Image: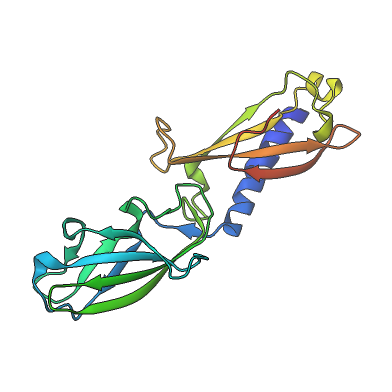
Length: 202
């Protein structure tokens, strides 16, 4: 096995071993409130950012009734925060932590307040590394800050590894993408592999 194959194999193995370090976030973030006895068509939800430094905290958005789902014939209603615009909900692959207060209210003057927190990185369950496709990208110029020299380039060593995650395994449009940015020591060996949500430059 040549050095290039060794590096790629190491990257594949390391990505599998590293995945459990990422907290999983599901595609949907459902919140529910009950005891809303007013007219079903009147229920709306005010969304506040718990981490806002502004006092009083302004409403980020009011979720209209059309996006609030009644649960059967009960007095319980639900929403999916992941589909609400204007609240700064983290995008796929964004590990940002968010905290919200939700106020469900109806035309019978009922108000139900609940809290929802969002964290982690959306993606496959850690053991599902089969969902990841890794593509090495090779340097064309020296990058001294990461130890990429003309020798490293001549040896065919990657600059970084692009990781597309798609559990359909079709990879026509990845669910999300991140990068392993490689650094090399004075002997041209990999000294660090740093995950990044953006393409390294250079």
